[in-house]
Structure formats: structure tokens, C-alpha cells
Amino acid sequence: MASKVARRGFIFAALCSFLLPAPAAIAYVPIFSVVKSGQHAHIETTTDAKPLPGASVEVYRGFGRHGEFPKSKALLILTSDQHGEVTLPTLPSGKYLIVAQSGPNLKDWLYLDLSSNERSAQPLGLALIPQPPTFEQRLAAVEASTDIATVSQLRGIVCDRNGYPIPKATVDVLIKGTQGKKHAAKLRTDVNGRFSADIAEGQYLLNVSAQGFAESFRSVTVSRPGSGDELQIKLEIAPSST
Picture (cartoon, rainbow, N blue to C red):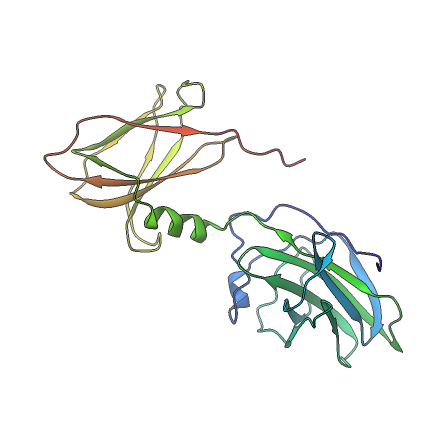
């Protein structure tokens, strides 16, 4: 198996999925290394150390110093063959961002400095690994969920897995069906982890977050009459970034 060029890291909430044809949706991809190459670079796409046929391989011209995603559309889009391989055509010398994806969450990328007109001899590896779901994907999942709390008024408590209240947590109340674009309220929990808001009857999605914790989503219907119970939202410790 040819050697692989490893680039790993967490993709921030600002990152969106690599859906075509809208590369502008991706704001930032971290730069870990830049690979020097000649013409006709041979790229091998894999997942779980196995060749990945049918992967989309997008080629973008240029990239920012700090990983800003190119604002232009892909220069070209290739598809890996039955062996998970693609070969780049002749390209002008310069810097390129190569992005490979398969399905909604398998992704990898590399930064290429094409500085030679000679044919490249060293194969380049893109090992596609599952990425965390994007904000949009998690929002769509909770919208489709049948686990909906019906209450007469919006009030509740945010706590950790042991039941201890989390003060200063953010509770973003989104209007259901707006893809997170319309907000009914944005709240902060008090010193006892509690929040409340006087909002109209309707269907809402709660996006709850706090420093050091993984964000959580909850589907809520405000209806009168309805349950007077207080919502309890538990947050898990955020995964370590190390």
C-alpha cells in the first residue's frame, strides 16, 4: 500500500458539508502540511485502509495562508475508479486544495504545491474518515424526530449528566421548519441553571450549549393547555480536542 499523507483535526461549527456545487459554504479547513508534487499526481482514496471507489475528488485553485476555503468553484471534479484511484490532469504550476468525499460525512483533504513540470512519481493518499455531523445535519435530525415535549410554557433547567445545574448556558429557541434561520428567543440560564421565556404557541427547536459541554438539541411544542412540567436538558462533556 502506498504511503499516506495524514491530515487530521476537528472541523469547527462554521464548517459545512462538502456538498456540490457550493464550495463557498466551507469557510475554513485547517492546514497541517503542504505536499509538493509534479504533474499528473496520482491520488489514492481509502477508508478503513481499503480502496474507496466512487469518491468525489474536487480540485480548487489556491488557498489562504490560514486555511480559508477558496471562494471560487471547483476547477475540476473527478471520481475515483474501482481501485479508489484518480490521476490529476496537467495543471498550471501553483497551489491547490484537493478535497475528497464519499457520502455525507466521509471526507479528507490535502494541500498541493504543484511546482514542477515533471511527472509526479510519489502517490498521494487521502484516507477518508467519518466527520462529526454538521449543525445543519443535527438540526434536520431533531426536526424529523418524534421525541417532542409538549408544554404550556417554555421553562426548564440545564444540567450535567449528574444533575448539577449549568449556569450561563445558552438556549437558542429556533422556530421549527426554518432550518435554524429564524429565532424566537435567545436565553441564558441563571445561577441555578434555569431558563424561561414567554413565547407564542408553536413548534420550536432548542439549541442548548455551554462552555466545556457538547451542544444539545430538543424539539418542543408550546401549546395551551399543555403540560406545566419543567424541561430538563442534560449536557454531556465535550470530547477532548487532544
